Length: 289
Image 1 (cartoon, rainbow, N blue to C red):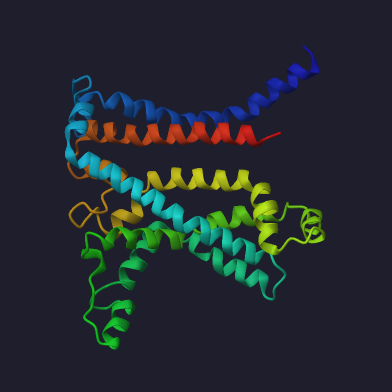
Image 2 (image 1 turned 60 degrees about the vertical axis):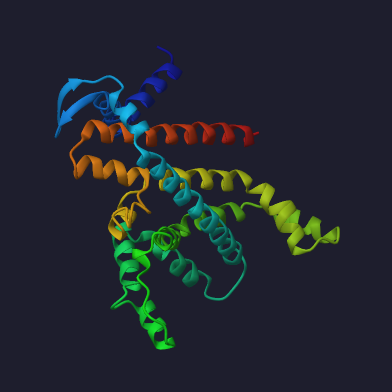
């Protein structure tokens, strides 16, 4: 056996435990859930094979369209705020300023907090009786506002809480990408009489575009399947105003124990993730020389 073949076999042997673990915790549950979605269930037991009945019932349910709309609003609402904030702060932190290490640590802090803690923190902040925000509103002379009881405001409050939690993610990746941009390119723009705005749009953005696309897709994958933060803050209410498809699947599974129906919902999330994953792979390959 040649040395190259031995090294290849040895490499696969080293990877085998990691591959087995990935199949066990990621691939197998997807196939198991896909099989579950074709059955009528009682708790975790399959009763009878019902073919596409769960999917048919899902498509007929008017709440499904509401859930999809809420999911899209949640995903794109987070992208609209998280990306500009993360990119803007990354540009600032890429400059030579005093106490740079302190500011980098402080800004990244929300990222290390769990979704549950973040949700409880924001629920307390906007509490109509004891929250600091409503205390300031009462001091100004207005009546307290129950933000989480508003069918219109609750979704934007959930988005705001999640933006506060996740903006360090695009910040960190963008900052890392910014530090790879050659200074010679900026010097060339200065020689040609360009401003800092020209440098940003014609040098920085094209150079880090692959990173920006990757961050956008990764944030989309993360937010389309988010359950904990939304569930703790609103439980999907009021009046299903914040019930995204992932929260709906969770409630169907663990409130009503309709596991077959819940896994049919979960398959929609898997399908969206697969679409984003394929797009991510193709975009990265197209940007790689």
